[in-house]
Length: 115
Image (tube, rainbow, N blue to C red; front, side, top):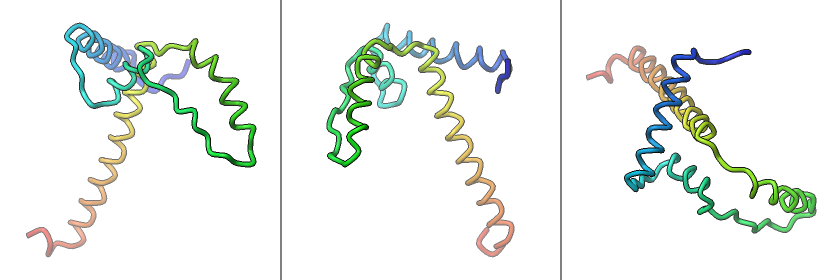
């Protein structure tokens, strides 16, 4: 089995997100973030927008209708929410680290703007 993280790191993120979800549910905490949206989706409070633009590819609509029943039966687990939170964390980490490297490079080349 190939893993991207050590068991310790995976346990940390899983425990962290599980505790956040439990705390929010017990205390009725609402925050404008992705975890809240995923919790609302799990409870069925988010609606799927069925408006599909008319195109010559009617297959899209048929596939969407066929998968609607499947979507209704699936429910997000804490592990699904943890995985999504981890993807957001890593995506943000990569873009910020790239920005910091570029900024350091520009400051090193243009010493006059450091003042």
